Image (cartoon, rainbow, N blue to C red; front, top):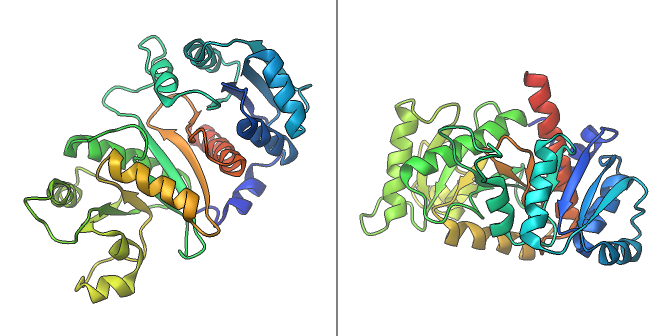
Length: 309
């Protein structure tokens, strides 16, 4: 990993030129994140879309100066999202930052055929990078917002999206835990059958550039000691998980929000994986600091993509 904490990440991307486009900018949390981004030197300007009078009032309330931002007066959320995506597509901004808009409008705007945001053969997925006080390294959780009940084939693509990002962050061969309720394959628990299939696909070289193990529960995924207590021997992933691959949206979204709400000392960043567009995808209720870290992660990935060309 090229950085060990979000504090290090902020240091790495400070001073870059990054223009953001925010649909639903009439939101105190996202405007606070914008102020923090300006103060931390990771936002150089951008376009704020929403009811102009309300955006101005809220910006003043959180101490955000609007001199480096363009305001677009708009009240319809679907129209905000379409406009924001079109602006980024046209090169008027570097990435999208989700404000006070429903994810369904945000995603629908991104998925329009004329936008071409999804490369052929890929899927879009939600990627969260966590820093927790009681785990020794940063790790990712996916998918927590987009794919409702993914098939094995779709889980392969979700895993590939996450592996691609982790490799860009400097983890050459990410360790993937296929998270399930239990650690043994049980025909009555479909997620364990998927885990068995994913492990085989990894061994057969279909799912590449990573090490996949499972089914593992959360305890096994993140603790070598608890894995040993449950009889897991000769495994490499327990206690070293880089990517927690969740079974479905029900599990993924609940774990994501539980960690975000209850996690002591929790820090997180969330982006859209698998897209041609750089997109930040936090929950509307995520903290301004999570949104700031998400912007920083998008900055880092933007620079990594340019370096790889």
